[in-house]
Amino acid sequence: MKNDLELISKKFNEFEKKIENLRRLENELDSLNTEGFEYKVKEIKSKLKSPDKIPEIKKGFLELKEEIAVNEYEKKIETLKRLENELDSLDTKGFENEVEVIKSLLTNPDKIPEIERGIAELKEKKLAKMNCPYCGAEVREEDKFCGECGKPL
Image 1: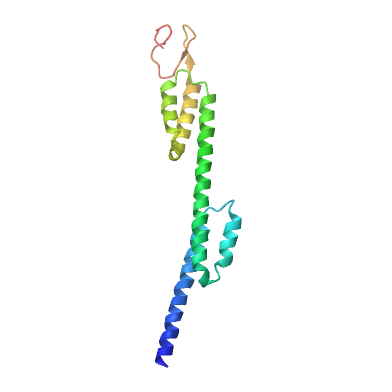
Image 2: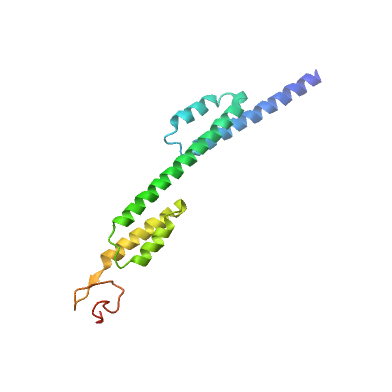
């Protein structure tokens, strides 16, 4: 009788651990951005009621995370291409150094925020350009002398 109770207790504890594992997996699944992967999420969630399917759930979960990572990487690559096209479409005469710095970042998807800031700053600088009151040449706000006629600004 004592052995039966110990066995039941052991089985109950094992079952309880499996249920906790299922809850943890469900919480982790809910924390992911699964937009576009609803079919996969539905498939995984349908198995979350069965503790014996934990290995299948974990496998599906890993596959989902990999698919999400690939999708996010592809989106970053598309963003880099869009930013490169935006940079190429700007009139950047007089801002060659700034453009070179931004272009050097275009190979790294993790630098997207820096690239976006760089392009925004470049646009602001371009708008801030002024003309020399003496010869009409374009000058930047921070210029002290006209690069064309040499007169002070």
